[in-house]
Length: 170
Image (cartoon, rainbow, N blue to C red; front, top):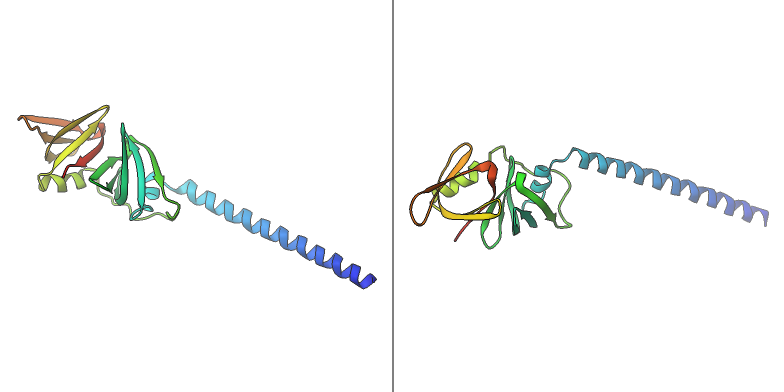
């Protein structure tokens, strides 16, 4: 009878010790995760979502689609249309629950890079600037501004820093 009591006592002590070790490991894991997140940037988190569905708010616009590319200060999302988003104008980015925490590939190219591709393709675009949108053919992209050819004639120059999103119209 006394042996049985000792067996239960030792089993209880072993279970308590195992529980302490489990909580200690969980705490260390939590500290590691918190440390990884503390080192992450918005760009690296967005890049981790490449190939997955996302929802963004930039300027006055809700943008949904699949994250395709992330660069220095911008991302490209493809849904019904392709949209280049200026991360400086991003209000929120909703990620799915399957996005990995590790950083994906962030391009070193500026926001001008995807816009220059569209310019070379002579794409019609809708540029979100503050509370307004401007439609036209993306004619040229300079270091700090883009040039739209307006439908009625003439040009509109828009500083890249003022752009929240550029949507390629199909």
